[in-house]
Amino acid sequence: MTIEIKICGLSTAEAVDRAADLNADMAGFIFFEKSPRHVAIDTAACLAERARTRGLATVAVTVDIDDARLDEIVGRMKPDWLQLHGSESAERASDIKARYGLAVMKAFAIREAADLERITPYQGIADRFLFDAKPPKGSDLPGGNGVSFDWRLLATLDGAASYMLSGGLTKDNISEALSISGATMVDVSSGVESAPGVKDLDMMDAFVRAVHNAAK
Image 1 (cartoon, rainbow, N blue to C red):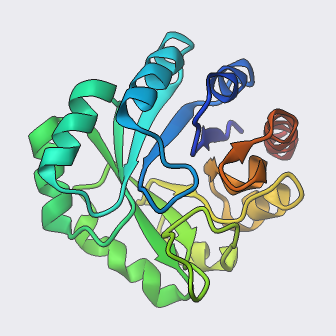
Image 2 (cartoon, rainbow, N blue to C red; image 1 turned 90 degrees about the vertical axis):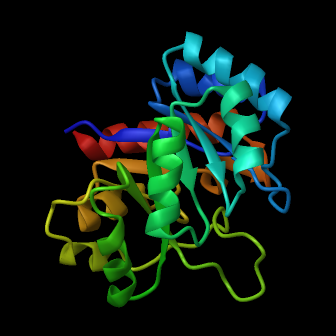
C-alpha cells in the first residue's frame, strides 16, 4: 500500500529539499499570521518553485481569507492546491474553486462522530478533506497544535470521501494511526519539528520511514 505524505508548514529551502529527497508528495505553506509557520508570500513563492522543480505538489494553506489576499497568493505562489483551514462555507469553497480553477482541500476539526457529518455539504465541491483534531482550549491555531483525535471515528465514513489524516501525528504513533483509521494520505507538521515552526530534518526522515514501514 502506498501512503501519500504531505509535509506542512515548510519555511526553508533545506526543509523543502529534504521533503523532496524523502519522496514526499505535497509541500504545504501556511498563510496565517498567528501561526509560527506563517510565511511571507515572496518566501512561499520561492520555496514553492523550488518544490515544483523537485516534483512536489504545492499547497497554500489559508484560514478564512478574502479574495484580495487569495489573488495575491495564487498569482505569486501558483499553488497546485488551496487548503481551506477555517470556517469557510460550502458556498465559499465552491466560489474559490471556480475563481481559481485549483483543487481545493477543506479541513475539518474532529472530536466526535457528529463532526464528520459536517462534510456533507462539501461533497462534490472539495477535492479532498483533511481531518485534524479540534484545537485545545485557548489555542489561536486551527491546526498544528500537536494533538490528535480518536481515529476510530473515521470508520463511520463510507469510503466515498477522499481524505488526509492530520493532527498530532509522529513517528511513534503513525503506524497505529494508519492501522486504526485506514487512511491512505497523511499530513504532518508539528510532528517533525524541534520547536514550533522549526522543521527538524532528522525528524522528517524518521517520520517518513515510519510511514513506509507501516505501509509494508
